[in-house]
Image 1: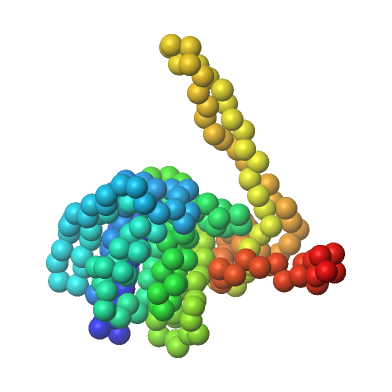
Image 2: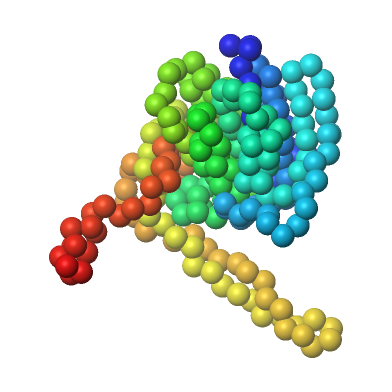
Length: 256
């Protein structure tokens, strides 16, 4: 297993505590190449850079581990890695994270972490997005490292049908508080935003975005939100086909 090539990225930046924890775990399984944003890129989803040049800098290199910063978005990092930097090499596993904050429910649509993981799944290798339900810069990643090792070992040692992309969310807490792993579906929750208006010293108005998550199905026990709230690791298999097949027969009738 040590001959595996593992690609690592994130959206919190190349020097975040979460990616450092992930690299620590991933290097147990093979050679690690990490290319991650130079600055935090949360909320960038599938964004790509088209009108500015992109720059890469080597940050760390020793036997088995290479870390580079990249001036673009998380998806830029993925495209650069697979289409240029690692071109011609077989990547056995791609991992994005470990994110500071969960990416459950509708968060997956905004997440740079999951944007990168989904992009990785386009390149014929299993992809995993890992997130910890703790936004603190000093978050405790001990449990996340144990869970990450378990998830990585299971995926990398098992033949899987591709494409495969997993959205893994880990509850906040110590390792002994984790109750297990649940295979879940995405919660039908959503965000309701508020914009707070302010004025700067020159009288110009500006706005701060804030808001709250609304759980659209609080009684359901098979969702990622329920799993996190009850101490379980939530694993949601993700697909990129967003076709609403259930609506197709009705639309066929009304548009014929």
